[in-house]
Image (cartoon, rainbow, N blue to C red; front, side, top):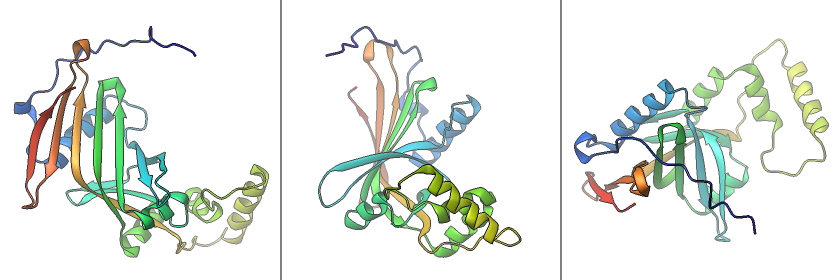
Length: 213
């Protein structure tokens, strides 16, 4: 077995204190997200999305956050993909941002649902033409025989619509994750990390608790 005991990074930040937190987790996320952008973190909107279908086998992948507000976090995907089937079977999910350059993580647990077709269309029309074609070409998660087949299909669709708009695919669109639990993690010296958990109560208010590292 390969041992990694010597791979150790000491965290050097000043920590995270309760008095510095916003009462609303979305406002706190916005602060950290903007700081991740300012710090030139690679793809700061990339997050890991974990879903579990009927077979109870967890599946995880990286997707890109495209919108967020106090209603939730939105990403876009093929509605016939593996993740889509798992979401249909079980709407509970978890998402995770790793901004390691800032010694920070954000973990979110909640439920997930499709956004409206109108909102999906609005976003689709804002995408570069190549990305619009890509949505048509990729039958996400299906087995394909070769990359050349994928590229041939891409060129076929690009030629077909070379002088016109790319139509909106009915099998593609957005998902919104509605948080129930949001955790902000800040690395600390000697592995005494600072962790604060926001939990949505039945009255619609958020409670904040410090967690042991």
